[in-house]
Image (cartoon, helix red, strand yellow):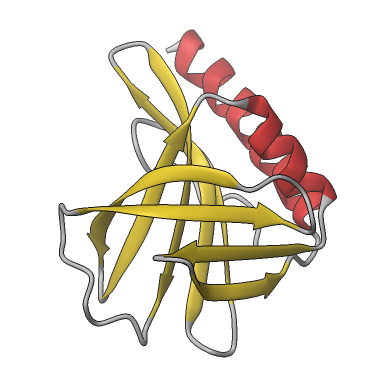
Length: 140
């Protein structure tokens, strides 16, 4: 995973990584009206049927843990349409940080299986970025 990439949604940090098969994975913060959410997004250059703005029920599983069921919104980010899930659940980040594999399912079919590389270090960097960004924003 790459480190934080600066402001995204209202001075919110995120980490992103891409895979050889065209899959992109991103985890970050999203701020709006004093609300702090985490979001997770997933996309692949091969996914052509996603419609921007439409919701898709997906299931995310880390290693062999209990899967997370979520409603994902399709959003266009440059040339990719990503599936994006918002959460306030800190356990999601905890699992993301500690586990080695992430699988996502749509309509009972596995749509991705990804090895999580250095996710713990990337999340630490994202949190450090956010603390520094918040501190800077509060002094201006």
